[in-house]
Length: 77
Image (cartoon, rainbow, N blue to C red; front, side, top):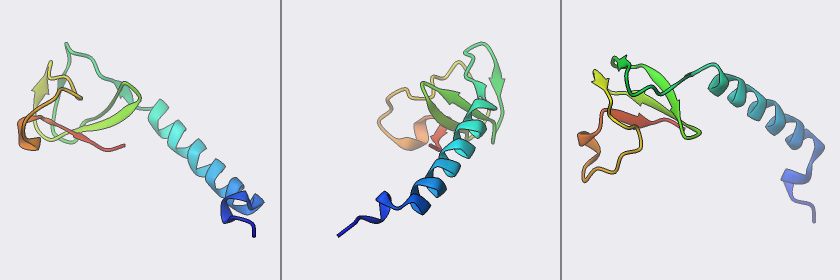
């Protein structure tokens, strides 16, 4: 029995979506600790995509916090 991921149709679909995702991420700005970001700003940091929840400057996107509301960044992808 063949798994659907082995299907040429699935591979073509998945390849196209991966290409679109990569192009999207390549067009995003890399996080800069000296820049001010406002709510809904989207950046990349260490290969992941983050969105600012509010005004922030210098807050590291993947910094460990005890509670999710303590960070100005939301992991998107």
